[in-house]
Length: 282
Figure 1: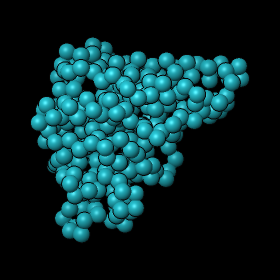
Figure 2: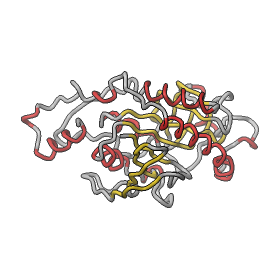
Figure 3: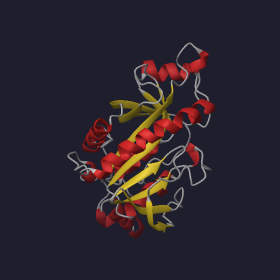
């Protein structure tokens, strides 16, 4: 089962025929919104708006654990996220699409970043946090759709909600060598790893953040919204082409990430942790 997590401006998917809506409670609270199960271009998928149905949630207010848990409990094996991002590299122009395969966690505030703890200890490898097979199939869909898509990029995640300073933008560009900056993919990508779900985000570049000298290129909310619509249509085209094609078959260890990761003996787990692990490892 494939799930789409919609970012800024994506609170529904045009053409998605709704079958049912899931109002789910999880051990970690409520997800961002009801999860829609529907048919899109002939395939059954799930859809969840990351920021809520009316964009009422800041990046730091999104209940990422509840979102991933709810999707996992509904049988999701793949997640494609859609996210607005800033470009930290000249060649990724506003309006371009990009897929990150690496992440730099620059989140300094408190976000729940793991399902583990409280008697259940596990350490999941995130050396390769995204699914290479899924990324390849999305790339092929972009080529077929004649849409420019950059791949193998590094996404730096910041707290928000404020837009970054020029010093921060230059640090992420030069010291970190990041290509994209956004506010939401951490901890989403890492929780998907812990839940053994293949994960990729299609980043929609809306601006050059604020690393360039010309203030006219510095990001504003007005720029983000005005440039987002046309680019979003390109992302939807790539997504539709991917869905209509052959689904990716995971060649990495996305769906087996918990093997050898858990250190706490099974006989020492509480009933609550046994149930938690049962869902994550399904």
